[in-house]
Length: 114
Length: 112
Image (cartoon, rainbow over all chains, first blue to last red; front, side):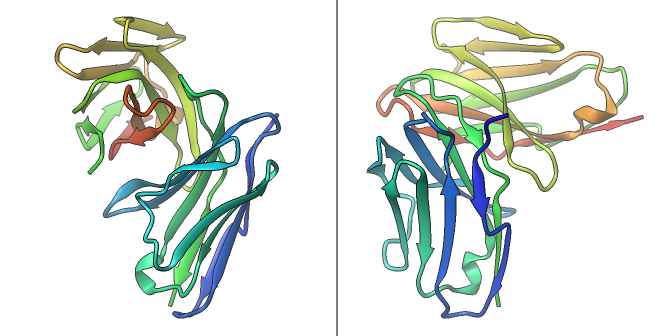
């Protein structure tokens, strides 16, 4: 089965450290989403790419977060510097098309910032 | 704020019973989707209903959409313990096609 691969699955780091999360979307999918999930906020959309171009990153704290797609097989989400409030599960999802966008989610990266 | 809001937040039923979850949204949509999330896992797509459809079935799932009320419901018939999960609706607003915004989810517990 085709799947979205996220690394790392778990990350524990100290406040102030840089964190990079990676996502390999499903081959052929042209949309990539980054979501953050916490108990308090639920699923928040952080960034959204179509054909590798960023379309919407309004949900992302710009001062410390950045999202890129260096190529069609890799999406990255970087936090620098990390803070305890960034602790969450970060999901990458990919899909096809600009209309009905059925998403396939990765297993998530669980980040703990001490 | 989230586009979709699920109701109830939590639902507990016995195996064999039906489970109904509701989703309300705020703005016009192109389509609405339902996803399931098992504990510690990513979300899995269940079913998509387009704005011009009123009802859709997939196995034991039945989804309805009422665009005049801006609401949708997910019915799971003859529930099983394996249906225990969180269920989310996601809307794809017609002003930003392709951008899926999720609600807070309904946590369903099916007791054996």
